[in-house]
Length: 358
Image (cartoon, rainbow, N blue to C red; front, top):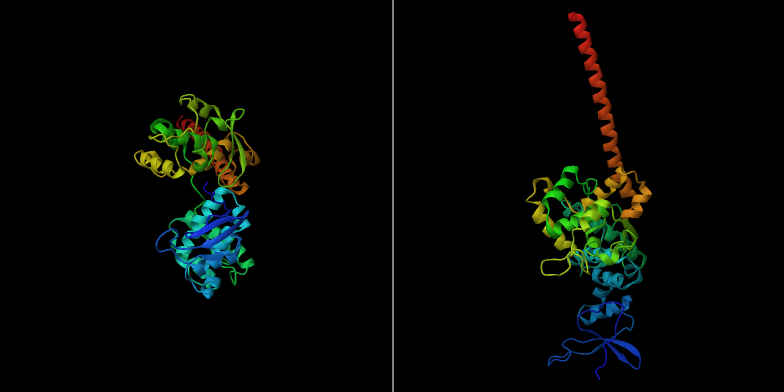
């Protein structure tokens, strides 16, 4: 019987094998295993979550010991293998890994101790045209820097004093005209996805997962993929009416033409293609629907803590978007008063004019 390949807590790099013998797991580095050009079998430390393990891997790959001890790649490998990173919510790990790969491409083989705040600031400035990406990168590097400095992979904090990009207040909430256009002009799965985002306020990465199994006593119960926060979103009458028109079947509500579930990126792509043909939606973003949900709930009289629970958004962001809604309400009330006062004044002027004419 063929021996099962042992499972490890972290993914192993190319040419590293885990072998179980007498109930114990051993690790080896060997290039071209099983081929005519099979290389030397090099034993590795037994803990793949230790810095020593990854240093030994890089040494086996041909790097010098001095380079291994100092490389930025080595520090990142150790961070990714550690409990700090693996204890993060899945969505956060995905984002951190993406941004750390950007950093690897720039500084991977360079000495980690040589990295300074000016290098991080330079990278953030490169992404200035994409504030969200710039700030995601900076947030990731702050988390990494804190860990790496504490564990002696860095000689100083590499994010101290680094300024993020100005994001312009976040994604804009959709206007009433845009919401009407979405109802009237979007079609198919794109419309379905927009309705789910509009009336639940959830991120695209969570909306593409929603299906009948998430329904719990008149709402959607889910753990958010990015943060791990548990939320319960009521299925409001407007969304319930939309859902009544959807076919009843198991699985996620959002399926592509070939029957595969949508991904967040694919939904964003299809939305953009359709929205670009609708004048009202040319500057609308799917992520702006989270802000729109907050504004809608605020208009319905919900308190900020209630909105935090329903949408699963931070208190700071809820306060920001609630303030936007409150300002609009206050402005409309002020405009009504100004118009009423102006009409009264004009009426008095008219009366005085008629009296003088008499």
